[in-house]
Length: 281
Image (cartoon, rainbow, N blue to C red; front, side):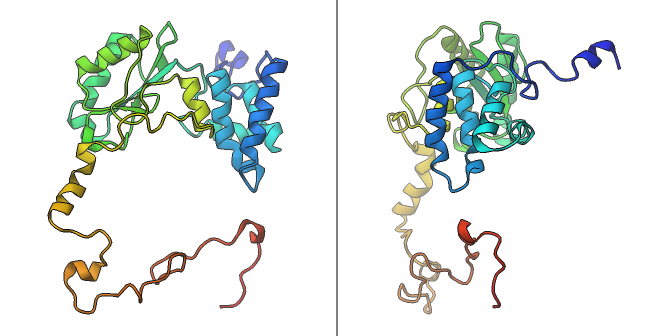
């Protein structure tokens, strides 16, 4: 082990290190007010950890050491418990993130349709690799395992907004527009791509009212429904009626809403009874 490793066993920007600069009074007051609203949504304080980490990112731009300490104190956890969660999920950043996270799906279908080529093109164009940020702080590039939009492959996401049916040329134009400060319109969802800090606040549970401004589900996503309707398929029919069985279950025989059927998994006990032993069957 070298002397450098002895002096700095961890990267200096990981949340495992305390931040040298505390929050100023105004920022801390606002954080406490927002955190109180988040915590109030949950029956147990610790359940609010995930949104609180997003709240920290909406202020700091990544999960800082001071952010970890704030969450720990607010939720009566240890710094180690908070850090364990923050370092587990890739949406929580351990170093300063760009104003825009550009995620290129390189999972099976997107890769076959050109996702790998798009990533390689952007990496060369921007001069950065996976989870690295351009020197101007504008774009962080990521490989994404799946954007859940296979019907629009290859897909790129900008701060988790869909940019569908991309090519190396269109993706290059996308990052150039983001770096130039131009307004970028997603293919679906919100009417514009917002900053990483803005989106982090939304993920913390503070609605910005933009989700339904743009197009919702597009043509490829609705094609199956269109074909089903054209074929006279009734989505509310029972499986027996669809097969034409004479002994199909009638609506009267079906479990009432909220009641368990034979294939349903029993509901978990209420939080207030958590830990109690179940009685005899």
